[in-house]
View 1 (cartoon, rainbow, N blue to C red):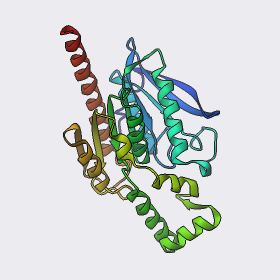
View 2: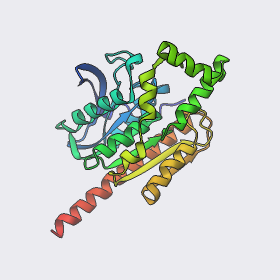
View 3: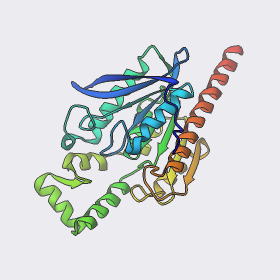
View 4: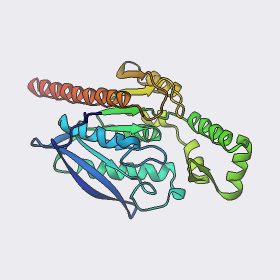
Length: 287
C-alpha cells in the first residue's frame, strides 16, 4: 500500500515535559511555514501511548502539521517512555499530566495560544472533556475519537475482561479489593484508578466549555460502545459534528477508516481555526 501520509513537510522535535516532578516524553510536530501556529494536544487512551495503535497518532500529527497545525503527542506518566508505573496511574494523575502538557504547549513561541484544541482517543476523550471545562477560555475545539463519556465504559470493559478470564464480574471485583489491582489487557489496573474513574462527572466538568466538537466513532466499536458518542452528541447539540463510521474496531484499525478519521478531523480543525480567525478580524474591524 502506498504511503498516503505526509512526512517531509513538517518538523518533529522530541521533547520532555515535567508533571509533578516526573518526566514525560513527547513529540512536537510543527509546520514548515512561519508561526505562530494553531495547535492540537493529543491525549492517548487507557494503556495507550504517544505512537498510538498502528501508528495512529504519528499519522494524525503529521497530517495536522502538513495542514499548518502544530501538534503534540506525549506519553502520560506510567505509559510509553515516560517515568512512573502504570499501576500508580489514576484519572487524577492523567489529568495532571494533560494539564502540564497543555501549559507546556501553549507556552511555546511557535504556538498561537489563542488557537488551541484537544483530541482525545478513548479514555483520552473523557480526559479532554474535563481538561476543556477547566480551561474553557483556552480551548477552541474538541475532537472525540471513540471517546469514553461515563462509567458505562468501565463496566463494559470489566464484563469483557471477566468473560475472557472465565470468571464472573463479581469475582473480578473481589480480586480487585483483595489484592489492590486487576489485570486488564496485560496491565495492572490499581484500585485507585477505578475509584477515581467513578468519581468523575465529565459532562458536568465540560459545561464551562462553549466551543464546538467533532465526534468520530465506529458503529460497531467493541471497546467503547457507540452509545457513548450519543452522550456527547446530546451534550453539544448543534455545536457537534458527528461522524459514525462503518467499522467494527475501536481505534480505526483498517487503513481506509483510519485515513477517513484523520482527514475528517484535520479538515474540521482547519475550518474551525479559519472561521474563528475571520470572526476575530470582523470583531476588530467593528471595534
